[in-house]
Amino acid sequence: MKLNIRCLGEKEFNVAMLIAVLLILVVPVGLANFYLGYYKGESPCTLCWFERFGMISVGFLGLFMVAYGPKLRYISSVFICAAYGIYMTLRHFFLYVPGDIGSGQAGAMFGAHTYTWGIFVYWAVVVVMACLLLFVRKDSPIMADIAETRNVIKPFTPFGKIVVLLTFIVTFSNGVQALFTNGLPPNAGKHFPDRWTMDLTHAKQRMQANIWGRLAKPWSLTGNNKVTDPLLPGALEPKEEKFDMNSENGAFKELKDGPVLKNKKVLPFEAKGIYGEGNAAGIAYNPNLKEFGVCNNRGGMYFTDDNLHKVKSFAVLDVVNGNDITWTADCSYVGDKLFNTAWNKQLYSIEHSAPAKTDEEKYREWSTFRKTSGDLKMTWFWDYPYILTDRARSAFVTNMAASAKADGYYMVSVPNKVAKRPVLIKVDAKDRKLSEEGYLRAAPELLKDGRNINDYYVTGLVSLPNGKLLGYSIRYNTLLLINPDTKTVEAAYRMPKDLKLAHSMTIKGDSIFMLGRENGKDMVYELSMPPLSNQK
Amino acid sequence: MEVLMILLFLACLAVLYFKPQKEGLAFLLFWCATGLCFFMYMVGSINAILPNMTY
Image (cartoon, rainbow over all chains, first blue to last red; front, side, top):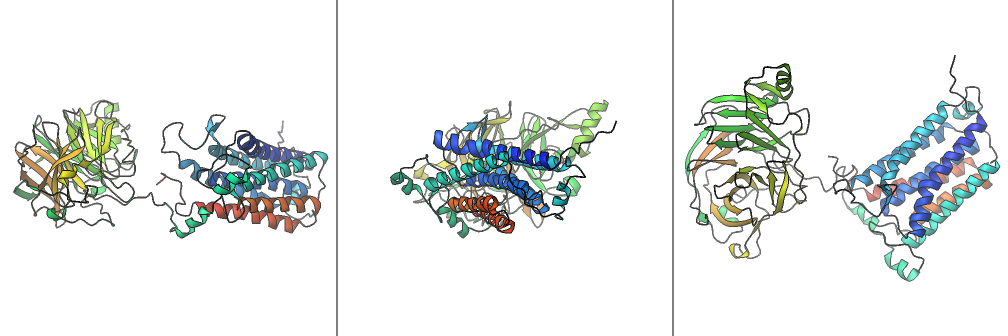
């Protein structure tokens, strides 16, 4: 039996099209205007208006097709309007994506915020238009309309006249709402609309033409929320940042004498990552295993002997698949696991293990590592946890410090033009989620007049046995003693001038080890511990 | 500006219904209204064309 889906003649096509026009104009546009607008008093925001008008456009194109046939120009116009409508809705909807569940503007309709329904409506427009064309009979005169070889004007049927009347009512009614909400040109919608009223004493107050001010802003694909790369020595350099290395130019009135450089040497091995790329990003010492862990900013992880001389084990993570860990920023031991943070706070961890034996273990090893010495495994397979923050959402991190006392680890975000203040972030090692965060501050009595520590740029962080933190700010070359409980800097120490692009910190015995970058090579700096008078 | 768009849409509907022989004019009015809608949306989003948090 031959199935013929081409069942629509001219009459059926027109009826189907009129129903489609009714559905788009009465349901989303009409409901938004009459129910939300007049009954509930909820007004559309700037972008809501244009989403709504895009739907009116699609409805009008349906009437054009009923009156003149589905000419190619109308069909292509439907797809253009639907494509633009999907773009408008997605851009609008994504403004609220970073919020928690339920957040957004105004109320919900059928379980979703009104502006998100555009995604479905415009998608349905594409599907319905495509299906209607698919089902047109080959011998129908509509085929001549599509090819634009026939030019006829088709009078509206009674049903068509009703649809035209409803179209007029809905469109006119939207005009009334627009007039009293936004006023006459050049006024236009606003980001935070207020409730519907025809009382012009109020309505006049709220009409505004602020939208035109946006033309004065620079054109941009990604907008002002795009922030520059953080400083990852050897890999990324923030173009807009200038790093003053003079400790005396910092915000603190008094700088204490800090660590003394005891030794410096070139890292005795090349810490390479995927495709042989990158350089050393982080260093951590584990007194239990008597080993150093060194992470590379492109997924390489190296474990050395107690003297940082010889590599015992290594692995190179397949950073191009799975969650985005393009740039690893630092590492720190949580127990015997080497935790690594990417610059976007993505966490992953590696640990020692027996060589893979079973097929599943071998598959996991092959799947996660591009190279390996064969005695390491990832703590979590592909499900690397995201660390989501609020205050530091638009800020990268360049450091991490595990803390046994806190049963987790800390990071300090680096400031940029959007997230202007450093944020101290605490992550619980058990559930691997944010457990605390707050802006890093310093007591006013420690600071010069009119200064703050918002421009301090922490590239190295380490935890002390008493739970406090030492953070190295590459700007002003200063070591900060941080109380994580109060999120305050309690003291500042002058650092040796010999440090070059110093980053990452770890403690071994009575020495601080840091990485640096000189003449294109990874350096290891060994420094004395500062006299921590505040340590209790 | 929304009022202007609506007026253009209503003019388009009037031509389409009362003067259907002026198909070109109706379609021109339609694209004036729709184009204005698209243009105003771009004005509203000019400093961030891509959706937020998609980069």
